[in-house]
Amino acid sequence: MALVNWYEIPVVDMERAVAFYEHVFQIELERTEIDGHPMALFPEANELGGASGALAAGDSYRPSIDGTRVYFRVDDVAATLARAVGRGAEVLYPVTDVGEQGAVAEFSDSEGNRIACAGPASC
Image (cartoon, rainbow, N blue to C red; front, side):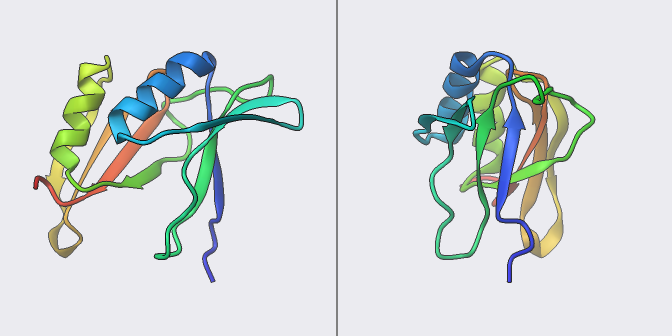
């Protein structure tokens, strides 16, 4: 059983955030509205049992560098970090080898959240 099955990343400017995430992670987000809140859905979790989630805007969604960290599984941590920096992200934790698990890095997103990625350091 996966304990986490959904996450919502707070955003202020949905269009800016969607452009940032689609570029950095090379994915397409599905725009929708849920319970009166604009959202952009990440692709469904894969067969590995990972969680899925959305970018979410509204009064109760406040971006923060100090909030929960969401780690995205990527094929190339260094390339993902470089794409984020290219879109104005600040490196908060450089690409760091964590042993058998591969590497991790953290950066600020377009809205001011701390986001992390994990996977091979470089392809």
